[in-house]
Image (cartoon, rainbow, N blue to C red; front, side):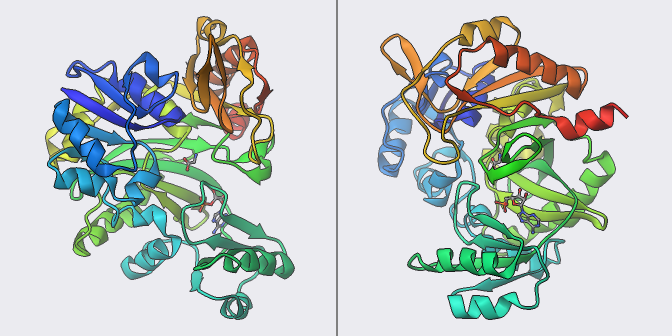
Length: 420
Ligand code: AMP
Ligand code: GLY
């Protein structure tokens, strides 16, 4: 069968790498793609905002499945328009993608379905927001309502900082915000596939969102990850599925907006059990890179079964017992404005050193591969322990000639525990 993959980041390179190994794949197409994805897929010059053009392409090239990587096309209704044109899609409808697209929507759903999450209020104007702040203790969490690429959250240590964050949100026309109770604990990401009815746990990971070693500095889209996240024990995972994910899938179905695709639950493991921090309507980036490199067997039949509403007919995935770990190579300036157009050397050497190098923000310039975004590469390796996987990944990192930076401590929490 022919498959079209939508997206151009490291997550999509990992999906392309895995889909290209499928026994049932004929041709993999990708749009917009990147130079790494181009090693596994035929890049097609489609405007993914033009849903009718994507549907026409699928009809003309007999594409049986479209896999949507990023959230923005989902929130824009690409999956709805393709389904209306008779194309199977891995990814939720615009209505269901509200679980990622609107923090307030998700918080209200949690309240309705009694799902454990931080206490909150939704606010729609600055005066109301400042009044609503007073019952919260410090620190307090301020979130812009809409999609913000991981950058719309402020953890305010004092009221002035909270008020400044709210003022910045309400400076924008139509600004909406959520004020939240600050949760303490360790974070873990849980991935669950669902066709709207059936659930299939699909692995765990731990991301590193802050830009600097030791988890300091501004938030990013993610500077590195490893999988599995052993801190999410089988018992805690089951508790999160039973108290958070399953009630969410049931509530979405009951609302007439069933959720189909991968549901990525960002969890805080508090001393009172797992609580939902946020949902994403897609695989994590770079969490997808570590999930795909641990997944044994064929991804494509599973994604097709999700898209066709028959997830109960496929055998559950087998993930290798090994740890996979990925280090994000970021361009100078990230998470602010990245320096682009700088040549990257040594990708072949990093792969010869035993890593898989996924491309995120790269492009070809003549015979060079150059930086073209904030997060540029994800250097990925596996090992029997997190420590071994980390050592292997940094051997790849050190083989690169890279014009930017990376964190040197990916996996540190688990390595500290392994050392105990
Ligand atoms: P989000 O975009 O909602 O995932 O938030 C980004 C990051 O902010 C999370 O990964 C957490 O580290 C932190 N965060 C968000 N909400 C809370 C909360 N209620 N309590 C503590 N930390 C939070
Ligand atoms: N790495 C975090 C995310 O994909 O949202």
